[in-house]
Amino acid sequence: MGRRLGQHFLSDPAILDRIADALEPSPEDLVIEVGPGRGSLTRRLAPRVRRLIAIEIDVRLADELRGAGNREPGAEAIVEVIQGDALEIDWHGLMTEPLLPAPGSRFPPYKVTGNVPYYITSPLIDKALKPPRPDIIVFLVQREVADRVAAPPGDKTYGALSVGVQSVARAELLFTVRPGSFKPPPTVDSAVIRLSPLRDPLIDDAEVAAFRRFVTAVFAQRRKQLTRSLRSVTGWDRDDVEAVLGEVGVEVTARPETLPPETFVRLFRRVNR
Image (tube, rainbow, N blue to C red):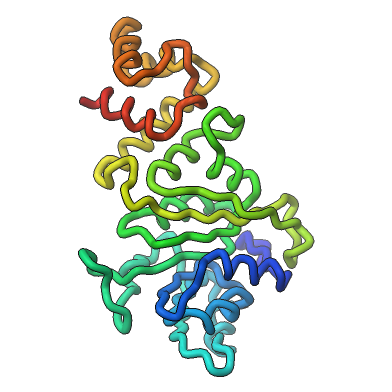
């Protein structure tokens, strides 16, 4: 069952403790855990937060988690196990009492964590970053994806995923997790990333979808100079594209992977003006 669903259960107590610590849990926190599996991380977080919602797609595992209970002696957290697909469930719809909403929001402050199946990593990151965003996201993901999420401009792994995430959150690759820490072991290294949504995102919420489409289209031709990529994306002639690049302070010979997220935002807005 675990292999069929892409599940590799983290079994190293030291790594589980580091993931829990990375979420910076507090007694007032609401936490959403994606893919709790057998509840190893759930049991570490429950004593340290006020409410924990665990979303598990595997019916058998969800039933086991409900039956076993996930509170350590003396813990006051409310632990709720939801059986279903984390990509389809409305996370914000689960956020009801007993926690009060944040100022200016219908929802309480919350945090997100989980051991994310490799095949749905990017969609889950996208979902976790949809507003209203959590205070902190800590995901265990494939190392290759972690590298791309946290890559700086100019890095060989810097691309559309890097720009999309970093336009709304600070991204950190915290540490690597070797295959032997899992049962069954995956064939690749994993890594823990922490995303801290920006108080003032570089891109407005209403622009995010169009911005990501724009960035993805530009990076589809990452080996070309930005002038050629933009001509392909916009349909403009060379003179118009070079004039726009000059307005936003970008060399006409620059390549997409050299532009920081804030420059991509300026370019996107100028192209769509």
